[in-house]
Image 1: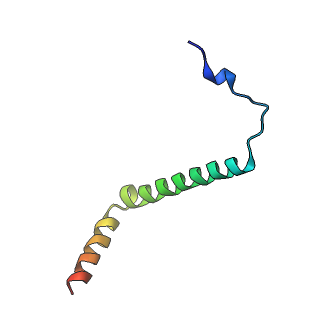
Image 2: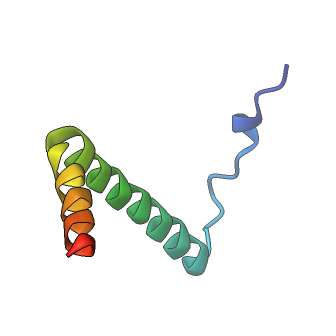
Image 3: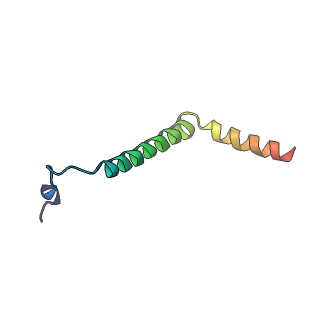
Length: 60
């Protein structure tokens, strides 16, 4: 089987537009990961507090 990674052109420069879009996407994924980590792993009670708070305020 042929290794496709040996065919990657290392001398060719990527356009700045494509590089910017990829880095923006990576940044958004990183931000989403950190929010999920914060609210679901480190402080899991916040989601239920927010949800219960919304339900209580809607009932008033």
